[in-house]
Image (tube, rainbow, N blue to C red):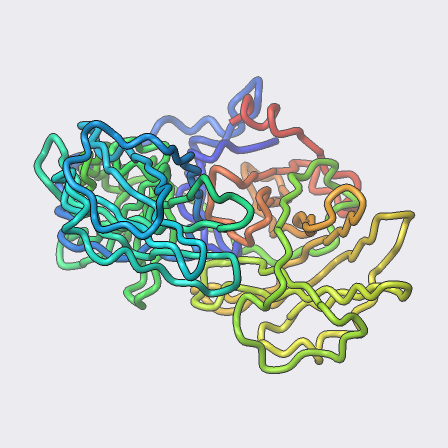
Amino acid sequence: MSVGHSAVVLRRSDGKELKIPLDRISTADQEFIQSGLLKQLDRQTIGVEMTSMQEVDKRWGYRPVGLELTDVKPDALRSLPELKSKTPLFGEITLGDRGQKVLLILDAMEEGLPRLFIDRNGDKDLSNDGDGKVESSQPGFISASNVVIDVAYSTGNAPYSLNFSQWTKRTPRSISYRRNTTRTGVLRLGIKSYPISITEGASTGVFSDLEKDTLAVDRSGNGISTVVDREEFILGEVACELSEVSPDGKKLKINLSSLANERRLTVKLSALNGLMDSVSFYSPQSLTLTNEPPFPLKAEPEYRSKNPRYASLVLGDGPSGQVCVAFDEPVGDYWRIFVDLNGDGDLTNDGDGAWSSVDGETLKLSNVQINVAYSTGRSSYALQLYRLPDRQPDQIVYHRDCAREGSIRIDGTDCRILVLDNNSDGRFDDLENSQLFIDARNSSEQNSLPTIGMEQVKQLG
């Protein structure tokens, strides 16, 4: 039996607790519990003003957008800065719900760093938008961070920030950009206040597309926000639903309903590692390897290779969610992998680096138990890691090898509960990417659990 994500209304990010409205648990062909629909009280809609802007939290990830540049100067461009290149490249980005065209020029010289001019004030004059300086953190890579643009919305002008980057040798005639704007405000429910934020995901500057937005709330007041399901998130005894966002992201509309009379079941869950023998489906993820650690490490093992490579797993919702993985792959010798299992930034105290198995060109590391930092404290989370050098020479592939399990008693029947995190980010409160199974047989053997495919789960939910 599977429960759709809309039925689970509260779950900690570490997956140790969930709450279920008993009336909304169902199977494909019958109601599991028939106790009558419970009425939600005092339904109302409130508005929230998003009064501040900040950079996007790295935990929300990023989705770069590629922009092809051209030699042709746009007709709308009124004035140019003093350029050093004889062949500058031009481009334009569309932002806001009114389709504002933001012009830019890449002034690439034969020597030295290129310059990037962006029409920040929207006047089609690139001679008054700064000196075009960019940063370079490594050879062949440039970036311009937190470029604030005055965007014209149907509701008025508002600032919107983007990050730009380019690999100058690999892609000399294109540039990437991504959103770096989060609107923040305070959701007030009675005497309690909850910091709330909205981040749009398409780098278009349009926040009114709810499917692409990331909504986050600081539930506990500890300064750490976590992503919530916009369709239903619980604050105290109030069920909240994000119903509308203004195009500029400065106003939210939230529907509120009291949970005072709603009967809910609280279930305590514990970690279950080594799950792949009993769950037949998974969604592999991949990361691109780099030549430098993702952050400064306290200590590293003695590598046999002259050029070790690195990757960074982002797990959980805690303040230090990055987990470093190092790859020691010398020519003519056996390969090793080092994972910072305890999260202390020291790769010398996490084992000898041996892969669990090598099958031809496939290297596998099983039951990798990582002590993940959550906003509620640390908890174990297991992965399987793969290296496929022939097919994916510059990537590591991984997927979850764990779940959270518990038991409930419903109508006199003892049932086993299993919660899966399907996108392998260590977040069990991301309802769109999680699954909840209830096994009325309460079988003690893992391999007897029902293995329901994702499409079936969507139908059941």
